[in-house]
Length: 298
Image (cartoon, rainbow, N blue to C red):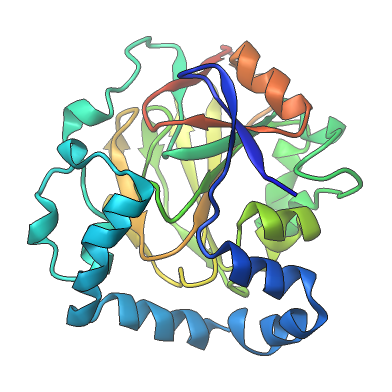
C-alpha cells in the first residue's frame, strides 16, 4: 500500500519514496523478517555497526549517487558535496541560512525540522494517528506519569525525518532550554511502514526529553527520538541557554528519526490545512522555519 503525504507547495498528494522500502516491508510484514527484527535490527549494536560504516572513509562514495537519486538541491548546502569526508558528514550537513528562512511573526510557531508532520490539537481526543485503533501512552513516552500529567490535554507536533531530509533540528519557538534527559530503549524504525504496524515505537525507542521554557505559554516538551541506525543524537546548544525561534538545537547521525513537540493545553492553534490533513491520518510536508501554528497567550 502506497504511503502518501500532502505537499502544500504544489497542493497535491505525493507518494513517499521510502528509503530501504523492500527491507522495511520484509522486517515488519514478513514472519521471518519480524524474527530478524527482534533478534538483531532493534538492538543498539546493529545501529552502532551501521553508523560506523557510514562514518568510514569509503562511505564517501555514496554521497554523489544519493544526491542524484533523491534529487537534493546542492545549492542549499553550506559546503560543496565534494568537501564531505564521509556519508555521515554529508548526512548531517549544514545548510545556507537563506535556504531555511524563519517565519518572522512573533506569535508563530515553526516546524523544528524538515520532514513529514502530523499534528494533534488535543492529546485526550486522538481520533487517528497513522492507523486507526492505536492508543497513545503519554506517561510511557515521558517515562513518568507526573511529568506527563500537565500535557494530558496538550497539543503535539510529530515531525518525522526521512534519510533524504536535512537532519538538523531546531527550536520551534524562543525560550530557555533546560537539561536533556536520556530515556533508553530500542532503535526500531520510525518509517511510516513501521508506525502503521506499531505506534508504540515512539515510547519504546531511545529518546531524549528536554523542556523549553517560553515566557508566553510555559514549558514545551521536546523529544528527540532515535531510530534504526540512529543511535546518536548530538546537541549543539548547552542547557540553560536563551534560544531564539529557529535556532539550531542539534543533529541526528545516519538514518530516519523523529522530533516530537508537546505544548501545554490551549496554547497553540495549528494552521488549518495541516490540522485537516492530520485529522484524516495524512502527514504534511514542511521545512524547518515554516509556520505550523500560532501561540495563544495563557
